[in-house]
Image 1 (cartoon, helix red, strand yellow):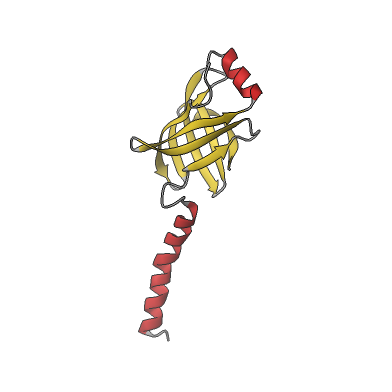
Image 2: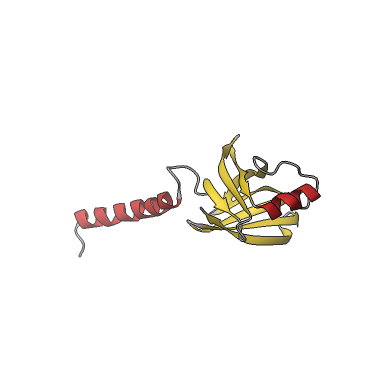
Length: 140
């Protein structure tokens, strides 16, 4: 039979371990999405930070092809452009907001699913959560 002291330690471990696991996904106590990320072909990098009660991601670098594709669609300045806007957590490891697709010149409904600390699935959708296209982004 387990002593009261051992039972207390076991219960404390049940409370602390999940919090430690969640803290390991965060960057300096902030939201786990905060930080620098790049898309699947490494053509664009962004920095995700809190903004106005949500999360936003601003383009920090882009290769020549991404810049040319954006210009062809009417986006003249890619660096500093808010790519992700208004992302709010709406589930475990899940956020919803909007994503701007520079080479299409249009903003889409979007959601992000954190796969693990260093990988996130980013989806842009035509109608809410329907007709979505996604890619895996990686933390830098």
